[in-house]
Image 1 (cartoon, rainbow, N blue to C red):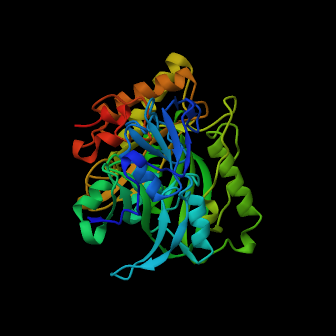
Image 2: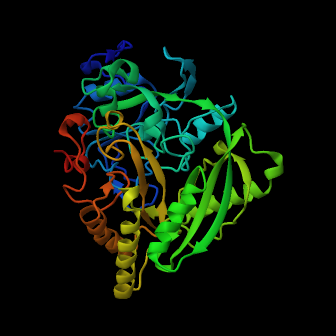
Length: 452
């Protein structure tokens, strides 16, 4: 680990912060509008020195100090009543491309940069990150040390796997850097810390020449949950990556089979306007939690991966809007998970008349355990799949009841790994974060319940 220069930050008694500070007791909500918080201080730093000054001055900026980006999380990760909320959206520059000692081509980017902006910047230079993002508003800092999932082509399927170095502010206010080449285990542990070890301000992320993707989209029905599980495996075997939205109670699934389509930077003209129609329909489907949106079923559609990194408008409380849970399972458990989830869902429907909108299913390649020592994807080489209930109204009481009860089945019955930022209504013990990965200055009560 290396300590960086101090940039001439004043002493604590002379703390100077140039960014915007608000202390008026305002509340802030997540994207789904079903969770909110009232920090003592909300601040938008404009320099690394600002972040250092904030961390050092506990009188002016009370603990815990919690960084946020776009506040997209469905869980209470950003809730910090009475603490200091540090919004990094003004630290959003893409600094440039560089090569490391091994010859890797990397992009240096600030933590507040949105994934859509990063993808567009790279696309203009004929490059891409291997992670095929869906949510364009997610910030680099949040996904570098948090949980993500995507059925990516030629990549594991989670963003942090491609982060080669992080620069962060530690609990003393020092600016430090960790990298895979210089720091090994300490670096990989940091990427499992959800920002509880320090506030990330900058990352180095692996890039590669831009590639095109081809999709075959279909909707198919099955006679039983066993056949549905077999269908998921069969579809995956037929392509390079698979995304599925399973309408479990109907035994019907939407399939997006993805294939490598060779090098390329932009969506070919011959794929338009069909590609744009599919992108917009898919975007609207996700925005509305797949409620009342008909998505086209194109075949052989070739497109730029960067073009499908979508952005979503912030909904009103009366709009349909996506909400979801997240559960990671080993692929060997897919038949058991689908059949038991089907039985649970049908039983819940019989009791209440309610079913979730569907189950989003992604497949993720796990790396060596030393590269992901804690949390999701930490069980060593293999394939994980997610089976994630979704709905279109986060405030629906029956959705919340379903999710709480399904937690018991998925986590305690089926042995799923849950995410503190993507799985709601967790209990102590459902997620375990090693205490060594958290510093008191950065640990909110929400995260404190999971420390062990």
